[in-house]
Length: 497
Image 1: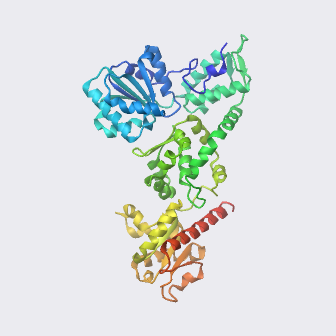
Image 2: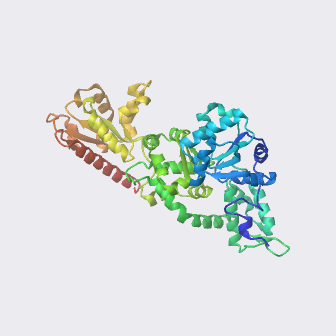
Image 3: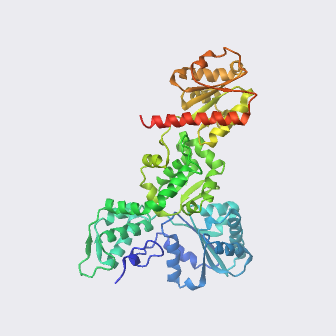
């Protein structure tokens, strides 16, 4: 008699249901080559570690190999000491991408030295996520030809179906929606195990069916999916929420972390090239690039042990990766508009590339920059010319700027000082946004030293006065808070219309 948990295993190396991935023979062959390093990389949940362990077992090498994990503090200490050792035998390091940069650099140098010295008494095998080996190659460009790099990708439906068939044979059953489950698993052996286990549980099958005829399991896929998601929700919803809101919920912001998670959920393998994603989603470019370039994304992940267990961000490759196939499955089935409201956002659709565009004379740049920094910290998208110089270069400046003030920004913040009317570029900018006064889109900031009666058009709408003699920081904080309150109200009204 065989138990359900021994057949469709939710964790660990499968026994009854092991199916060789397409790269299995290459892995098995590589393990037998003395001294030559190996890098085995690929998305989570597709059986990289299981593949290695099964190959070692078949080769009779299990007792001669040292298995280490970069997730374990004690193992990391030993990993860092390896480069100083001789004749270490075969050492397999799982999740090596989780080592800090110094640790990975040491491993890169060590692999190169072992290859150059043709040390047959030491063999290092690294297991990591997609393109994990790329960072090692960046440390030592000539390493590429000195190690065996094997990429284990998501498997096909035929192999998933083979896994299910092996489980059906072991339990003497037939799952009516086996083909649907093989598609639902989306190339993940791990998710196929979980879905099949749930199908059997709902049918009351927990040990091998004793009758000669296989037990027919006629559970629908929606029923299986619903129960699996219900079980995943208590663990993964809080973590998805914590990632989506960042260190602090900014209701007025553009929800950059939520968008990253949403984009990640739509990837084939749970691996998002953030730069490519930003290029495809121009309206989110400013807010998403800010959290990446300023290190906020890395800090969010590194400062939370629970998030770090699920999500990895590699600055060198710009890859955001999910490390638990169950979490990927969970977020793939989120209704994102509902999720956004549940975590505190009014919505996740935004008009235009910018929430605010700043229009000001060069003499008032200090005020403009102060506002820009404060608003950006609130995850708001702001057009500020100094921050866009690299994009403006080689473009026709007027053609680049005109649409921003004309329509691509939700609001235009105009810094009206006595310098404003006499500048060429402020005249150009105001010509492009003046038609928007009747659309409640122009927010004037009047400097107290501006001449009386100047630009009377702006006095027809509400604005704020900036006192040059007042405390700079206090006024900037106040103005940015008012702007964000205005933006939050707009988002709330827009999503309830």
